[in-house]
Length: 236
Image (cartoon, rainbow, N blue to C red; front, side):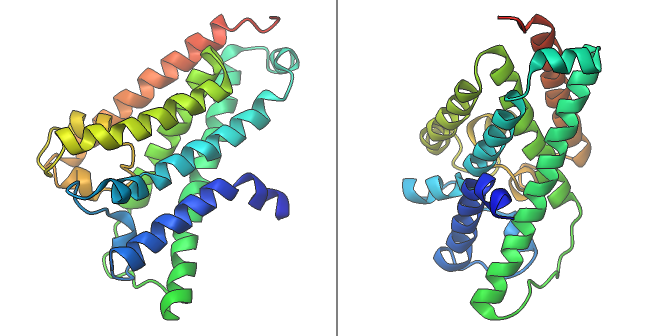
């Protein structure tokens, strides 16, 4: 248990800080639906940094998992699995398992904080299965992108790229995305803390278009992962 908490410490701290900021700083109601939404972009820089905490937490979480994965011998992995597709499949399974834990951790921490603050569980007044599913998909995409970068270059570089992008987007988002009717591409590219359905729904895009966009992104990342594994100099 102590090891799990140690590995997930940054993720837990980021999610707790984010939830406390929403429930206490922004006075969001303690409901199930409120933990899946974020306010508009028209806010000061401090609040925008706070809204990036879940994204940064997920990024650090995958960084720790990738470091543990890369500590294993790649040569032994190739000899044991034999096929590049099996190696990619194993990475995908690990990433999906980690993404599921992110969603479970997020909901669990939200419930715990609600009990501590108000002495009651979150009220599930607007159950929406798509909110956790979308968060799971996006958390998986974040981990997959970091894995691709880490295999092409270095694990720490993958974390650095994602962290710099998150901080850079804080500035760009205020300049380009100041209303809820911005184009979907602009929303996704310049706002890494999009672990919510509210911002996408406000764009008036259909669920089919959102799903197709996510599928295309994941397919591109999967192709990049396959190419990266094939071109990796495992002996160097």
